[in-house]
Image (cartoon, rainbow, N blue to C red; front, side):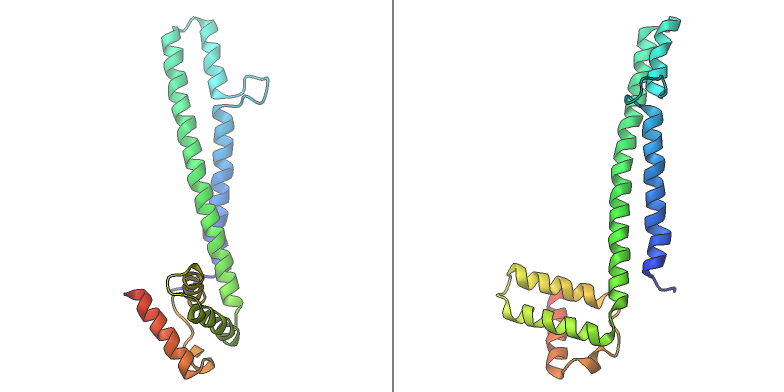
Length: 166
């Protein structure tokens, strides 16, 4: 199993998503481009069929079909932007998390454990502390982390993680 790094997340997730968004934008312009006076989009070319005595019902059906594609293209663009945004956030999180030393991680955890301990049960501050602790620890916390935390902090962290998994 290979490690997921910030660079890999960019290369395999963010960059292809951004390329997809760019291609999607070009598709949108090719389908419907009201910003220019020229007849340069599919919908505008379909409208010219009227001057060739194509029955209006046929032109209207073609326009309706292209408008469906325009709508699907817009939905696809929204999904691609969501994927790109999520991918960028994952890449940033990986970069930040990998930049922390074990000592830095322990220092950050101590502050979050204090915030968790001092906040009322069920409060937003307590929930944020739990969320941030989980984010900092990631899927596999370093084994040497226990060496940097006191026994009391290690037990507190173990209790917190046990409570959250129930």
